[in-house]
Image (cartoon, rainbow, N blue to C red; front, side, top):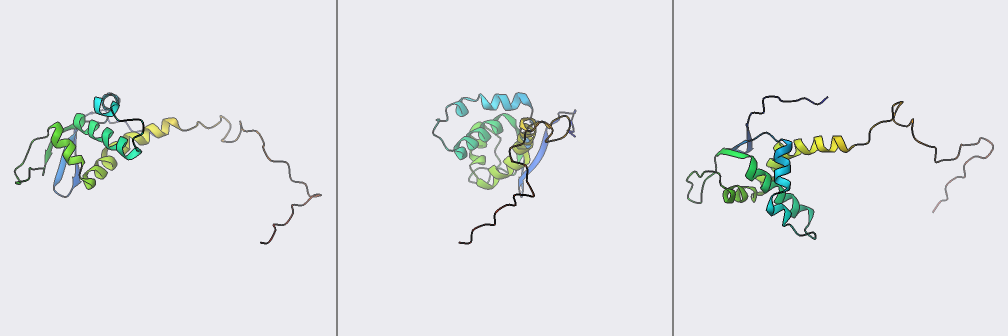
Length: 147
């Protein structure tokens, strides 16, 4: 069953010990906006899946991050989220993976569910046709060759 969160409130997610980000809810509008981000559209066709995933994650994070705690500059001074700072944060592998697992994957799981094939009305194989011949006791199967 699909559980709907009708509050649509931003939520805090811990991405690493001491690093929390407040994120907008992952909505259709947010996903569409990230997909049409100029940086995502500029990814060349020959780019790897990893390059595409990073570009999309950064675009999504730039639109979703509202605030954070535990993120600072090279001198340890707290900094506010900005597009450049969000991109730099996602360049940290641990943070990228946590963002993907805690935030992005929840939306993609729903996307996969809707792309799955629906079952036939009378069971999963009711609409399928046979592809194998019927077994006959008069003609038993041959034994496998030994190599």
